[in-house]
Each structure stands twice: as C-alpha cells, then as structure tokens.
Image (tube, rainbow, N blue to C red; front, side, top):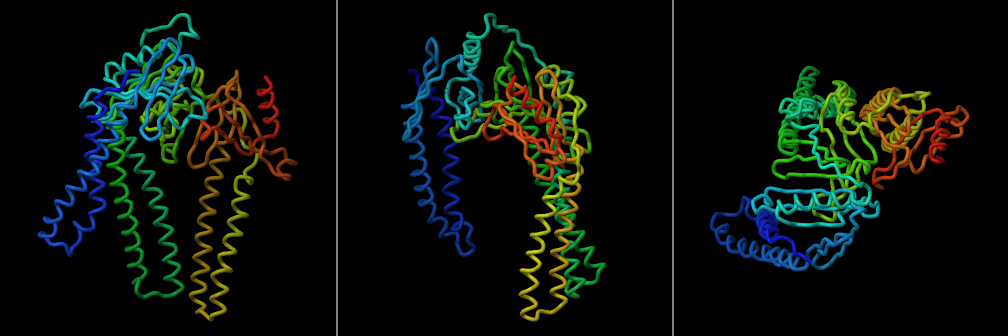
Length: 507
C-alpha cells in the first residue's frame, strides 16, 4: 500500500504553526491585553509563550508523522483501498463501479508543496457526511488518478468512453461569464438583503421605543423631532456598518472563492472548478445528479436574478475532513433568471424547469395556523406581563406601554407573515412532464427544484380534516438523495395531485 506524499506533513505543519500561535494567543490574550500588565511583565512572559507554543506545535508534529505512517492507498484491479487515522484507524474499500463523485482540493499550503487532496465518494446515504476514500499526493499524480478513476468507474457501464472535453461555462465563454461586473453585482445584492433586514429590525426598535416614549412621557428621549432624528441616525448607522462588513465578506467570497469558475464536460462526467486560495475541482457523473435547485432571495427575486445548485451526494465533500457534511453544490453562483433555461439546456438538458401546471387553491391556509399560534402567544404574554403589574399597582401608563408594545410587535410579525403568505400563494405549484417533476415553493425566498420521477421514493399528504373536505393538501415528496435534504414540500394544492404522484411511484 502506497503512503501519502510527504508534502502532506510539510504543508500541515506549516498551517499548524499558525494554528498553534492562535491557540496560545487565545489562552494568553487576557494577560497581554490587560491594562494592568506592564512591558516588563510582558517581556518576562515571552519564554512562557514560547514554551507553550513549542509544546502545542510538537503535539501537531507527532500527530502528522503518525498519520503519515499509518495512512495510504492502493488501486487494485476492481477496487480502491485506503487506510487512514491515528487513534481511530479507518480502512475503506470501494469498488470502481460504485464510485459516485471524485473531488480534488488544493489550498494555499498545498500549492506551496505541490500536493492536492483527492476524495472519492460512493454516494451512500449512510456515509454522506464523509468521504470514503482520501488520497494525498502530488498535484500531477492526483490529476492522473482523477482521470484514471473516471475511466475505471465508467468501465462497467459504458463500452466507449468519450474523452473529448467540452467547455460549456467559463470566464472565457460567451454563454455564461462570472465576470468581475457580475461578482460586484452579486455582492451588492447580498448587501441589499442584509440592509433590508437591518432596516426592518431598526423600524421595529423605533416603534417599540416610540410607544414607550408616548405612553411613559420619557423626557430623556428628547422632543419627538430629536427622537426620530436620533432613531433614524442609529438605523442608518447600523445599516452602513452591517453593509460594510457584508461588502468585504462578499467581495472576498465572490472574487476569491469563485476565482476562475469553470464548468467542463467530458462525456458523461461534469467537472466544476473554482477558487483562488483553495482550488476545488469536483467531478461527478451526469446520471448521479438527484435534483437541481434554483434559489432566489427576496432582493434577487425583485431584481430578476437567481443561483443554481445541485443535489449530488459527495459533490462538495472534498475537504479531507471526515466530519464535514456534504451539501448542495454550486452549479451557477449568480445569473439572470431568464438565462436559466439556456444554461441548463447546455449543461443539464434533462433538468430544464417546466412552467407550473398547478397553483395554490387557497390563500387562508398559508396564514391560518400562524395567526392562531401568534394570537395565543400574544395573549399569554399580555396576561403574564399585565396581571402582575395590576396586582402590584403599577402605573397605568406603564401597563399600557407594555401592552401596546406586545401588540405592536405581534401586529408587525403578522403583517410580515401575511406578505410572506401572499408570495407563497403565488409561488407554490407543481409540474409533472415526461418523467420529470418541477416543484415551486417558498415565500420571501423562491425555490424551484427539478428532479426525475425515478428519484421519487415517497409522497405524502399533509392536511387537516377541514382542508380535506375542501380537497386541499400539502404535498411532501421524498427524494433518493442526501438524508439531510431529501424533502420537497409544495403547499395548499389540490388533492388530485397526490393521486398522480402515487401513480408515478407505482410505475
């Protein structure tokens, strides 16, 4: 069995050195940042800092060397084997024909020493939280292994392997370009979303404090003009502060995380590559895709933009960390909603969404349960707060202020839910066509999930006796996919749809 490349030790120890410094600083920060600490004490503490750093770093060194000596891999005629671990050793064996996804990752430390991490996944739901095979080798060796494993896993299903590589989406292609302009727009839209919710929180705060000022006559808040000016300045300041942090974070995420974003197609395999500091190369078979999900935040929905994601078990699970969960993988980070059909038509033609064939049949069920629960909670809170005040003879103005505040917050939440219910009522729907299901659902955030009926493993109705009499139900469809995200819910539909879904299951 071949051991991993020694570059693993060097790259890991380089990153561990910085990690050790962070750990030591966390424990000693109170001493170094204490105002009572004088320079002489800090100088005397430097040897302690150095000893702690060396001790922690030596633990990392011992672990990395032991991991290197106990880990390795082997490619046999029919399967790939892998041993890894120190205290808890793991031995994995995976047949080539059961390979589901092959992913390559390189962070900045890996690049310095010319290595890369290759993870191989079977797509099993039981192991969807971890990669079954991990290989750490020279980058060129990993590239060769990636191509070899792609050919071996298709050997049992295809007689001819098409090795022609077709670039479908890239920064050099005219169909889809995740250009700097798009990345900047993507950043600004994310900032707008953050600012919206910050402003909403600020408005709620103004309402609550305003009610208190009105009923309690708090002179400390100044005149009404001073109060509103002060409240507006605080809200605007909070929006600017959050927007600044969001701008920096989103800019780094879009320009560095999605650097040189490309999608290539080689026969039946799709490969997605992106990243500057940490380069990801994810490879999976077309027929292993379980669903395509199109998402729109509220701001994206208003402006006509969307993101396209894939449900492929093992697709994003290329970190080399056994504790990282697989998740939806990005197909297109940001595009116009009108471009979705054209993009998917080139990359995933079987997953182009169909127009809704059904729609929600009633608005009231979207808000009925929320209204009932909110009314009960608001009533209970009013009783719990006002009754003790009455018993202890608290001023009537204080009681009115508390009551109006609770009612105001409840009314605001009801108004937000009513708006969300309107959007849900207009969004929810279903289309079934030629073995493909397109589900529309969501409120402020709109989601469209497209999947093949062959991946539908169960369908259930969620209804109440009153809704059942009116022929109304919510449909819950379970997909053959990651156990953490295998449900698609479409609400307030006609019960006749459930019979159609049952017929699909029988087929």
